Length: 470
Image (cartoon, rainbow, N blue to C red; front, side, top):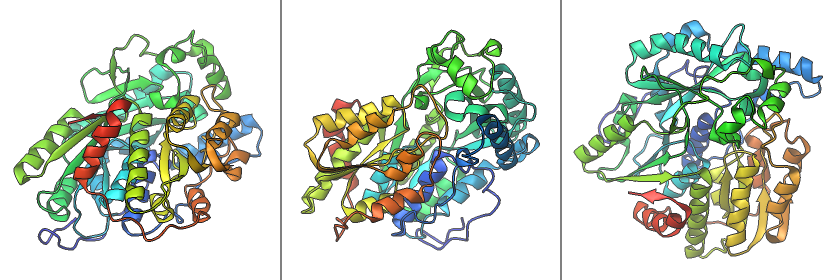
């Protein structure tokens, strides 16, 4: 992004990144939603149906084969991973935001509540990494050892060419099903502050404005030989525990059968791996680089670490309620979003209190149940369950989603379209927009939050949730 001073104009965003950043990845959707909120737009144009939504009427065996082929066609060829340009991806991210000055920035792990927080502050959200799906010819969902070897081979040229990144590979049949056998999932994390981010911070952020770094502090067994490529089987977003992915685990047999794979071949190489930060973590070197940049320009850097996504979701939802009430609104209507089904612009226009569930797992949904049970009652609770596109023993059933909606005093609604295809037929992000457009607007919107107030309220309401603010 070219700069002409502190708030100068910038060139149009680059092309060619569209295939590199996984189209169905959470981070990609969050950047799109955050940038639209700053333009005063909703997510009505985000109509891409996830790959797992395709071929819904086909027999399961036929559907698995068709999905594997479709995913492989959309993935990055393994031979091209070595020329992947992470700096170009960073330019693509910042170029999505309107060319004006901002009173701060939110940066870090992918989390829907982080995007709602950025929208309330009127600032951009910048991810600490991005997801890439790579074609795996001849792969097998039940052979994580081969997946690790293939992933190590294809990322070696990238790591040799760009020491500023690290790559976490995740082999998760609970989240990806049969797709684990045709592609490998990589999370590329920046080890240093990308040049595009540095220029953006230096030209688009008001001098001295605060920087909020939000970090996912969850851990998971990780094989990390220290060469820039690390590997994990499963992940905390699956709603399962690490032991569930072992050969004798209670869930792995069912997951592999659903993926058309064989439990007899399952031998995860990370069975005895030590715990490390999960795939959504922020690289320590990136945090150090951001701290050095902030110190150099006189901007305060504030870190918010959350032990589980529900803690940040609850703290931001409470913050929204207080924000709305200070603006003279009721703060009495709640929307429970899930995964990619969110729209921060519509939430603010309607004066809603948003609680974001990372996924449709029973564990994630239990988090919102506990929060609602301990909150002052809401007059209405609307629920947007995201069908993940496959079945898993960790998923919440529709009765659990209905129990969430039942906390509404007058209005209790689980979106029928999402529920009708649950859990095997995902819907696009714009479906959340269509649902939220049906909510009565509560205008004018409150004045943007100030970072100093956000930090005070997160300390007040987030500490009991386990948030660490420093």
